[in-house]
Amino acid sequence: MPVMLRQIMLVIGALTLTACAQAAATPFPDTPPLEPLPPLSTPTPVGDAGAGAVAADAMATTTTLPPSDDLMLVEEGSIWGDIAPKSVIATGNGLFFAQNMMYRHTVTVYNRDRQPVATIPDTVDLSAFGINAAGSSYQGAPVEAVATSDGAFVYVSNYQMYGPGYGNAGGDTCERGGWDESFVYRITTDDFTIDQVIPVGAVPKYVALTPDDSTMLVTNWCSFDLSVIDTASLEETARIPLGRHPRGIAVTSDGASAYIAVMGSTDIAIVDLGTLQVRWIRGVGNNPRHLVLSPDDRYLYATLNGDDRVIRIDLETQQVLDRVSTGDAPRSMAISDDGLSLYVVNYESDTVTKLDALTMNVLQDVAVGRHPIGVTFDNVNRSVWVASYSGVITVLNERDPS
Image (cartoon, rainbow, N blue to C red):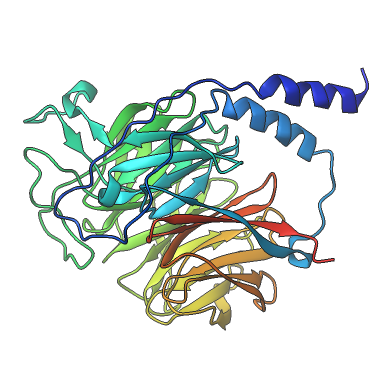
């Protein structure tokens, strides 16, 4: 059968729509009010969103794409609704997960057409997962997420828990203390259920996986440490002290090392994932927050919360090569599939900046929603999704400027 005909048949076979229920969550009453948002429309569910994306992925691999730094970001549309996204991630199989913190107590899921697929409440019965609990119903506060390499599961960290026995949560300015510990949820991407609840430290923030999905890393903001989780046994195999307010994580492509931004310092930790020994890149700048590695693991990029700068570090010399300004309060980053473009969201400037990842020159600034805080890059259609706390996700696509 000709290749093109086979591809067309794959696409037609994958585009089957089925029903998917949407569950609404009530915002926690003591959280600060957000801007009024329009109601979330009833989803047009995609029962097999992953299959459709797989077919699209297969077609995309037959096309040679131009370098991303030769392209221009163009806004494709926005997603509104009952959301307050702290982060957004692409799963790689056509789904996008937005984590809405305690402001909405939900994770919302979308497909590449920006259509809602599911709304997942963060309510769980801890005892059903073998966790000793005084009550039967607990809410979390979804912060960050990471998908497994096949897109089958998404792990979501919860800033804190709400329910009987949980009344001593840490906060953004916490010192080390006896704070409530929290959990990471695992969500399936076929039926959008929470099928695992994994204990970690106090105020878990960033979550990352090794390339083989065997080890999960979680930075515990108020425990001042890193949880190392065996994903097969769900056991925490180590808790590594790192210092005040660890946050961003970047894992090397061979899974041998992880870089950890310690935001209450000027340093980045290097954790050997075989020996669990820690080395340091010292004095990179004030309050490193988010980290991204180049595809070849040669360069490490970091946002500096205290300096309003983005830096590029040569990992062969461990020296800072570039220190650039992208806007007020650069927060999260994503890197393009070819490693040539870096996308930085600027919280107080309400923009996303596209940088040349090799020269660190600014290629483009694009206005997005109020207080952009999360960003992800979809390798298939080269779209950039920006999550803004004000209740909007902006979707941009890389296009040929000619």
